[in-house]
Amino acid sequence: MFTPLSTGIDIGDQASKRRTFAIISHPDAGKTTLTEKFLLYAGAVMEAGAVKARSGRRKATSDWMALEQQRGISITSTVLQFSYQNHIINLLDTPGHRDFSEDTYRVLAAADAVVMVLDVAKGIESQTLKLFEVCRARQLPIITFLNKYDRPGRDPLELIDEIQQMINLHPTPITWPVGIPGDFRGVIDRRNKNFIRYSRTVRGATTSPEQIIDPSQAANEEGIYWDQALEECSLLEEVGSNYDQKTFLAGESSPLFVGSALTNFGVRHLLDAIIELAPAPIPRNNILGEPRALEKDFSGFVFKVQANMDPSHRDRVAFVRVCSGQFQRGMTVVHEPTKKPFHTKYVASVFGSERDTIDEAFPGDVIGLINASELRIGDTLFSKEPVKYPPIPSFAPELFASARALDTSRYKQFQRGLTQLEQEGAVQVLRDPKGDYPLPVIAAVGQMQFEVFSHRLANEFGAEVELTPLPYQLARRTDEKTAMELSSWRSIRVLARSDGTLLALFESKYWLERLQNDHPEWELDSIANSI
Ligand code: G4P
Image (cartoon, rainbow, N blue to C red; front, side, top):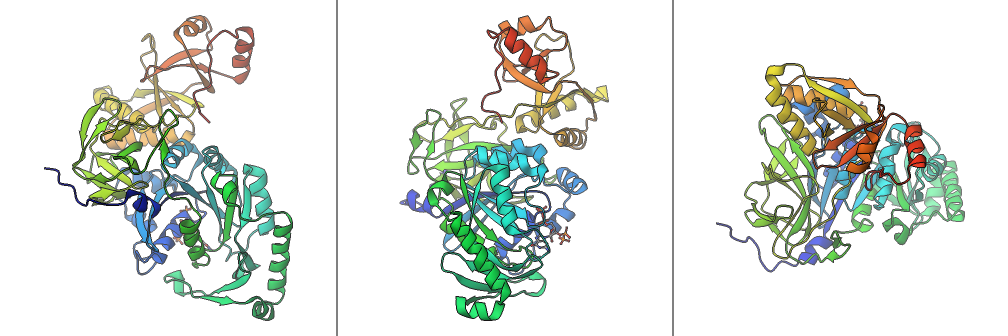
């Protein structure tokens, strides 16, 4: 029997205490280290390194974790919740590779803000450019952290210029470094012009002591470093690189912090900024663009589905972002696409392979519904007053390969794997609507999605797969009438997604443009809202 846990709770107040954000960065820029230091500063761990996510990963036993280790990438998104300064922080992890930018995009649908971590020696790396563009496309507020300032690196003014030029985001530094990369003394807080001097602790295992020093003392003690920092600050002033809440919330400007996650320098400032600057959850618009008030009954949407996260829990988790109301474990909600009741007996907060059962959640929180096989990415769940949130758009695939089960006796497992991985959005699965070509075509945005697909099919479903690359480079959505016309073109193939959408595959942009010119009446649409 479902018994409500707590009643009389002020949902608006609960929501105002939540900050839900994702960190995006290039692999190795320091996302894992920063996450761990957040936990240290939040008091969730006593010593950094004690429960280091990274070392946990090394010991990891699951199949996808093994692949992550081989490739040195993080594939799966995890959710981490901790409290800091009387607030609850929900940190969503994103894969740090452009090949998984579609996955990142889905996670960002559940986030209210983003922390972009850049390595001061590298700036915006080409491989990650797509991830940042995805982030810009969602118009989420972005806080920038220039990491690894304890090491030799590039001139921070140059990096600011690069961010502006490459992703059209206007950085507005809140702190500015005193010292040079490699000889990092501390930062000026541009809001009050104070100098904050950092000191190292052994292995950065405990929080770094900070000394607040007034400008005249700083000038005496830091000499040329202080003068240089002041000069750079006046330059920032001159070009108008000052914090502006309106453009920050619109995802156009980005408050920037400088630091070193390894030595803990600047981590507190960043965490404070997440509380002070990043927005709390606000009412989310339904599919018609109308907001559903936070105080209304429970609603949320699935932004990620992941199976077999851990061999000890061979099951399927649907991650739901709570948008309104109070979620209580055991409550029965409505699955919007089928209008059927959905019982939420098994629900957990999930971080990597660690699971805790959770009993209640509020707007901004993420819950993991276990073995919810009927839930798909983008599905809405609600209680009482119906609501439907907008679907999460999929990307236009750019890589295509036909897939064949190597061992025909494992055909059933192969099919099961295909269905599962398609539902997770790991790849798109296309089939010939007329059945002339029996082999399914796997479509992806990045090459590494194919590797994950093959690896997971073999390891989780016991079905080795042979992928044969196909020469197509782009896809357009089409209708049956145009599909008939296209059938006479040998270099074009029309395939169907499992939701029935027809996709026409082209070998080059040139052919597509020629056809569009010659037959403007044909239906060849860019895939809805895709990037
Ligand atoms: P990621 O999750 O973004 O992939 O990066 P991660 O935190 O794993 O950091 C990648 C490497 O960069 C690690 O070194 C980490 O210690 C180092 N690092 C992170 N932040 C800083 C920083 O502020 N300054 C310096 N100097 N290094 C930093 P590693 O040798 O690959 O791993 P480990 O053996 O130290 O764990």
